[in-house]
Image (cartoon, rainbow, N blue to C red):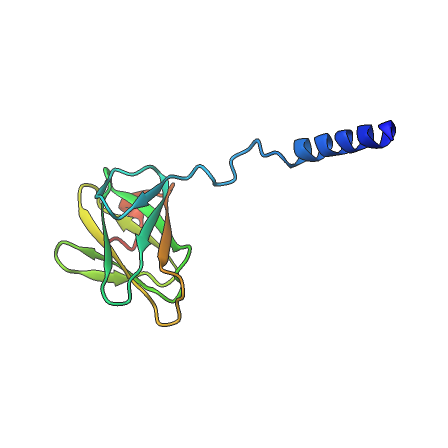
Length: 140
């Protein structure tokens, strides 16, 4: 019986050690809510917006420098998601979009619940790209 208990303790210890995570698997990416303006965010972050079927959710972002960003929907695939500048120019983001964004320019991001969407939470991932903004196209 002692050998069986000792075997169980060793087996559980090995399991816990083998299953522990030492590295960053994307769990340390900051999540920003649309409740406050997002000014000069880090190079990788996630935007969260609650979805409503009756009105748009809006998040206001401003980046510190001209840069190229990859913007990807994480959830809400059937939800409408778009970006708008102060001059009312709009651009729809279907799934993933790589886009040059101007520094010190206010961008409003909007999302609204899609017709086939059952969840009311929208997440989009923003990743700054190591691309030269001045030679990149398209810019918005």
